[in-house]
Length: 143
Image 1 (cartoon, helix red, strand yellow):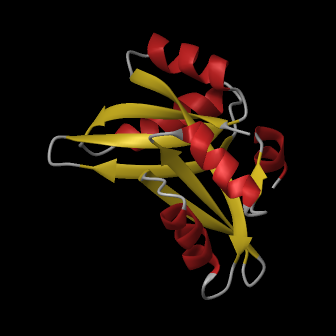
Image 2 (spheres, helix red, strand yellow):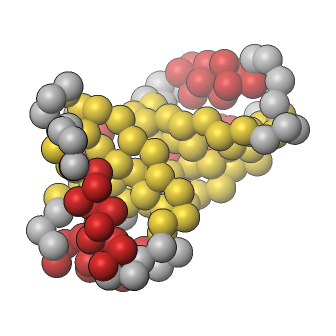
Image 3 (cartoon, helix red, strand yellow):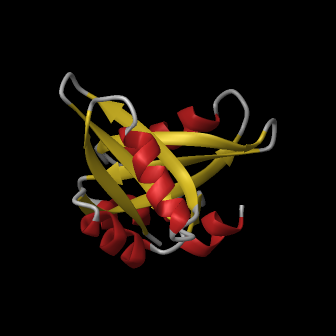
């Protein structure tokens, strides 16, 4: 179960993240997860939204460079060792993580990690083989 994530490339200047989020809000696109990574000159806004195709169309119409990427969401306990367990499974299965980001669903209960893998199918099999809960888009949108 893979999710579609948008990567929006923006100049590293005041107001660009606000512009992206405002445009999506004006078109009733709901952002479920967001992450921002930056370098000196540019930033990458990573988003999981409720309507990927429409969001791509809208952002490109506003002259943003947007890429559609497959990611995998894994639910873990929000407790010490929750993340370490997932990372140990991936290490044991020799799965490389390209990047990840996460958020807490409810403090002390569950957290969600969003992963980008070089070999997504292998990663998905490894996670499921080790009985880790992989979320689909609907699971994530209902949080």
